[in-house]
Length: 137
Image 1: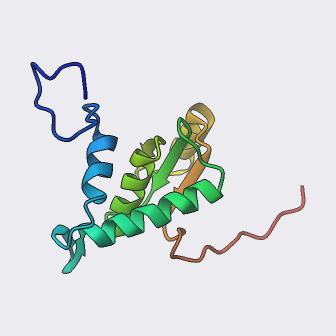
Image 2 (image 1 turned 30 degrees about the vertical axis):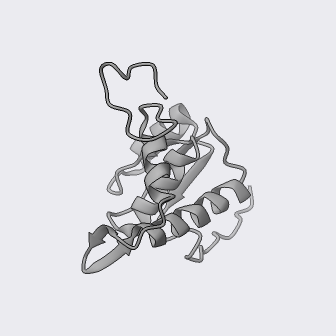
């Protein structure tokens, strides 16, 4: 329980007044209620919870841990929401990156933010990524 219950209602047992706890608590309900509809596709809470758990596993397998920073460059779609929920519930700092950003802006972000992960569409736990060929230096 959070220390500010006289000012803010307790939303669930163990509430710490943070978004991560609220998202994790609701996804754990495994309900068949709709949690999101986007471009005609609907996700249930149970489905979203399973996909977020899989994405968290994907992040963990890549060495991403609580407190790490992850830059994400993706268009608006369900996979983006799944990834944001996974990052937030894993304690990872989400750095949203504008998909229209050009090289100078990206260089600035990567040099100063130094995210441990730079994720761009279409790569992800359910999408294959093409690897760039290594160039001779």
